Length: 106
Image (cartoon, rainbow, N blue to C red; front, side, top):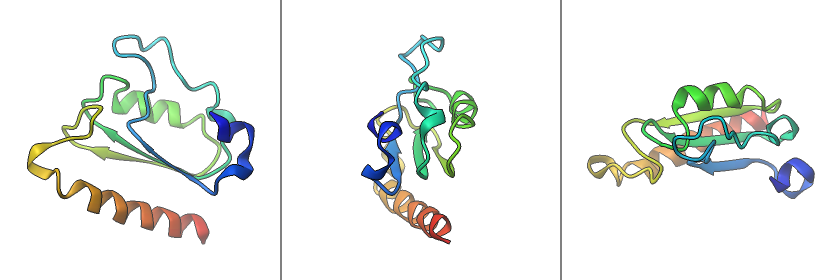
């Protein structure tokens, strides 16, 4: 990831459905750059995402030395779509991200 090589590019990261590994290939983690991330990172991830379970995400995020949060979207896959709450998700993510940014700035 470019930010791990040049941290001056951004003040923080907002990542939607980070592909932790290819579906059904949890041994092929895409985390080698995580220990170099020194900017705050807010991850939005579905609980049914085949690119990484919530447990796998929590474990991988421990590699990131900077402040980070995992915002779980219950019942969502990689596309983050849940028909019954589709209109609510952007508002929820924005609200949580704003809170995250304020905490990082403090």
